Image 1 (cartoon, rainbow, N blue to C red):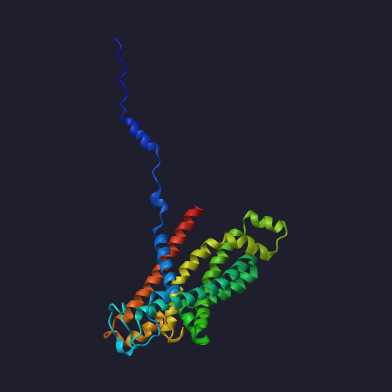
Image 2 (image 1 turned 120 degrees about the vertical axis):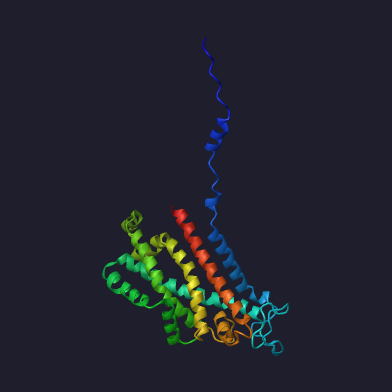
Amino acid sequence: MSLAPEPQSSSTHPASVEASVPAPKTSRSVNPSLVIGAVLVVVILAVSVLAPYLSPYGPNQVDYSAVLQPPSAHHWFGTDQLGRDQLARILYGARTSMEVSVGALVVGAGIGVPVGLVAGYFRGFLDTWLIMRIIDAIQAFPFLILALVLAAMLGPGSRNAMIAIGIGLVPTFARTARAQMLQELGKDYIDAARVVGCTHARIIFRHILPNALTPIIVQATLAMASSIVAEASLEYLGLGVQPPTASWGSMLQSAQGYLQLAPWLVLFPGLALVFSVVAFNFLGDGVQRWLNRRLS
C-alpha cells in the first residue's frame, strides 16, 4: 500500500518571499555629515547676509549706560566694555569672517589649482625642479605661521589678510591638482584631444580640469575651516580687519582683560568660531563621502 506524499508546509513561502525582496537602502543613502554640515553652513551664510535684519542694534552702537551688562532680554549675549551689543557684533563678525575666508580660498585655489595642473601636465624640469620645489619651500612653513609672517609683511587690513591666508593655502591646492592631473593623463580622452589638435591650455582647462574637480571641491570645503581659524588669529594679533569693524578675533582680543568680570565677552565669540569650524569640517567630510560613493 503506497502512502500519499505529505503536502509541504506553506510556512516556508513567506520566508522565501521575504528573502527575495531586497532590503531598503535607506541607511546607505543618508549622509549625516553632509546633511548636518550643509544645514550649519547655510545657517552661517544666512546669518552673515541677514545680519542687519537680525539684530536691533548696530555693531558699533555705543551705550555707556549699558557697559558690561550680562546676557538679558534686551541684550541676549550681553554688552562689552563700550556698551555695544555682543549679539550684533557676532552676527556682523560672521560676515567679516566669511568675506575674508572666502576671499582667501579664491586666492589659494586660483593660484594653486592652475599651478598644480600645469606642473603635472608638463612634468619634467618644470614640475620636479621648479614649481614643486617652490611649493615645497612654501609648505615647509606651518600654515598659520606663514599666514602671520605674510600678514605682518603686508600690513593690517582685510585684503592683505585674504592674500596672506590664500598664499598659505596654495601648496595644498597645487598638490591636489597635480595628483589629479597625473591620474588623468593616461586616459584615452587625453590622447583623443591631442589627435584632434587641441592646444595644451584647452586640454588642461577644458578637458582635464572638470574631471579633476572632485578632490579640489573636497579640499576647498576643508580649507574653509582652516581659513576661518587663520582669519580669527590674524585679527586677534591686530593683523586682520581693524577696529571698529566687528570680527570674532578682535572681539576675543579686546575681551581678554575682562575674563573674570565679564566671561560672556569670550564665551560667545569663541562658540561662534567653534561652530563655524565644526560646520565646515562636517561639510567637507560629508562631501568627500558623497563623492566617493558616487565614484564607486
